[in-house]
Length: 149
Image (cartoon, rainbow, N blue to C red; front, side, top):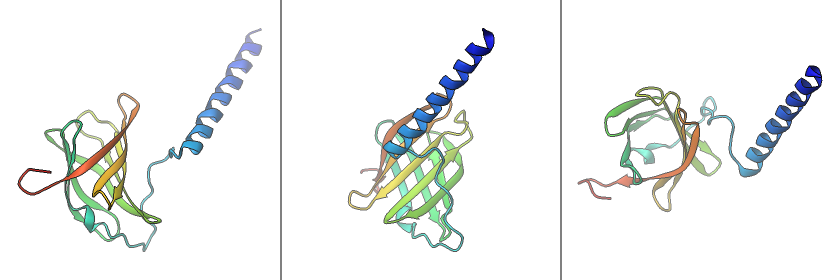
């Protein structure tokens, strides 16, 4: 009897995993964070330099420099400064994507997987809060000099 129940649990787990993977592929959500740019690939990420404000909470990303290989010199403020463990930019077809990972200050692997929209000069995408295991749609606007938007 125990073996039969154990097999049903395993079969149910496999069905749930299959459903999650299928839903992620249909919705376009990636199970893996953005990869680093391909070796030798050039990324024009200089447009990302500046201060980016997330209006729903006052969170701030400051991008001081953008290297041609996709690495970003960036810092997160909530409101205290927290370093990113990874800050990358990559060209994904016509879209410029950015990926940030936090490991400090109780964030334990929280990530931002964002895209740059040149028409609105915004960063938008998904914030994954690792401690709570929740994802949120977010966007950042460029903070203009002088503190305004």
